[in-house]
Image (cartoon, rainbow, N blue to C red; front, side, top):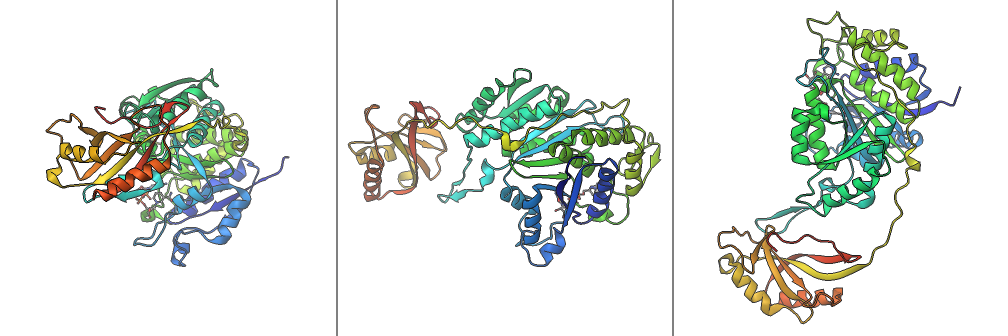
Length: 483
Ligand code: NAD
């Protein structure tokens, strides 16, 4: 028998200990090749004064095993506590959040009985970098950061996932009709990676219509890959339409480490009553087994679990008039164990292949492109002269240097100078674009410093600058609306 994989286990709070015990009983009965290291996280640790709910010894175990099976925890009320999930995700570099959303109709009621899709969400970038600034009285900025390697990693992961889990289509969702740069690069990389997987169908949808399709025709989707914020929203829509949020597991995957948990929380209202449904954590454990390359055991447990649901053996949360027997948490796991080796008849059985080792996932070679400075956007806090863009434009026209001249002014992205519409509402936040009078001229940072000095000495309050670059001759910035 091959060596056992060490995994870190946290029993969590509320119903955590009951559902973790039920899950581990099944893993042991199915002869999963694992050895557990138990750590304490959550409420008790928070109360000891550890602000992120996880102790130094627990980190040691996580770094040793790199595999974390986690029961839900109770987040204490009040300020000063950091999210354990965010801390773990950041510290372990868990770049992919994977949430399978499947309907188990007729055993679990839903309007979308054929739903069986997986949302793969980028987990580290986007607006979740949390870089926000108030720049004027009226305008606040949140920075959306998207990287090429970050995008490639999640997109490759989505295609690998499709291969291992026998899925036939990967859909990319972005808003690249509006964010042509940040979302455009995600879409472009998706197209490039898709070409390497000719046996997997691929397509792209704008996120708004994509979300509508998840709500209306979820069965038409298979694997969906998207950026962090969109993924956060659509993974909840997708879980909800299955009607079985309580049964779902999720995985947070990194190149070295991974964390597996149920979607639901610690349900303190039913803690200790032996009535909680352990299915969410069981399904998370199945994902863990595939990840640690024990797909045969994962398959055995997943199919036994489906058979148990199909046989009408239900915990009280999903028990209904068509169920056969209402069981306690501890009984449910025994029923799953009894069915190990069996497959469901009505529900589609699952089959898994070995997962690619993430450490071997090779990203495209970095190609260093030629970066050329073409101009600068200078943002001003300005509310004089009744916020009249024409007056601002005329003053700034006189302020340009020999190297940089005013090209346009926008307010909240809309061009207001030259030739703006008189009706455009203007805030106190102005983006003033300066470029070299001759496109072929080369610029450097000194030219920008000189321009800033000129603007400062004219009494303008500049609050931010963004350089305008081309990369290998391609524009690396968006045009203003109406430019
Ligand atoms: P919850 O998911 O714990 O409970 C919502 C409702 O669903 C409750 O009525 C509960 O009894 C029921 N429920 C949840 N899981 C169930 C299960 N397995 N079987 C049967 N019924 C189940 O959400 P909440 O009440 O908003 O949060 C409770 C605590 O959990 C909070 O402290 C919250 O911060 C925490 N939480 C933790 C995680 C996590 O650790 N990943 C996730 C979400 C919430």
